[in-house]
Image 1 (tube, protein in one colour):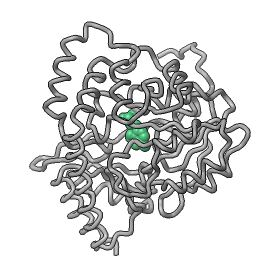
Image 2: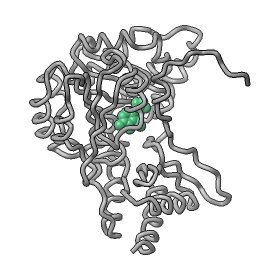
Image 3: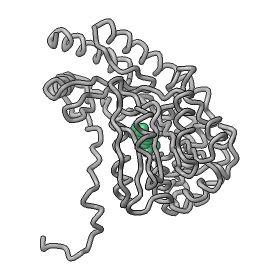
Length: 362
Ligand code: PMP
């Protein structure tokens, strides 16, 4: 091709690529499992599938741009007024909207690293500067270091609990101590994409925190516990001014008609969703116990995945061994490997592989 004469924004040059979980490659004679993207192993519930089918008959029409019914259902499910609810195409969309509402070029956004892949991308896309603060050795946020990284240029802090890819939660006490140190005009997003899998009683109580600190925004998603990753719908709970700002920076009609219907139907099926989440948590507990028995020392996970911090050679060997055994996992360069808690057979296969690898690596 001839060179394009387009004058792209200079900020684009600094935007890292999103490395998504690989699709499963078929292996003859073996069922393969994709446990690389923290998806829900269950297909949509019958009532949700019916809502999707019904909505798909109306896609010649635009969706409700204001997401009135969806915001009302979300608000009702968690005790927030609809004016405090903002929705987007996945919580990634909500994060983009909030960053778009808050950040100009030169502004700084503080977050832990490693954490969710999309943070540095969205911050760079806005022309702002990511300030990445290393996790501690336990894979937890170093909140003292993060508070110390806040400057006059900081517009936003993103806390991820449980943290992707490592798994630990932020405790309520630690979150409150952190917020007491951060100026009230700095917005603090608490990204709770995996919150439904948390069983720790000392985990951050984000709704109460949002009520106490109007600069706190809680983001959640229908992609993980609710199993609607393919439809792209997430939400934020915020002070009405911030929720409104996030609505304003959203792409018009970004949450499609089928996604709105499916999310509303999922909220109506909370008991069934909860039962599935309980089953995934039970599988996580089985995997975590099995790995501990095999002698692995891993970060404490409260999410639907486990993380293996490994050196470069070990990471590659782990990744390749899993791939050859029909388990598609997510490798983070030479730092470690994340594996989603999937169907029972996938989890059992993981334990077989880790048992073999553990004795080989010893
Ligand atoms: N936050 C975290 C921490 C995540 O891991 C993910 C998904 N990988 C998301 C947000 C975004 O998910 P979605 O856009 O599907 O809601």
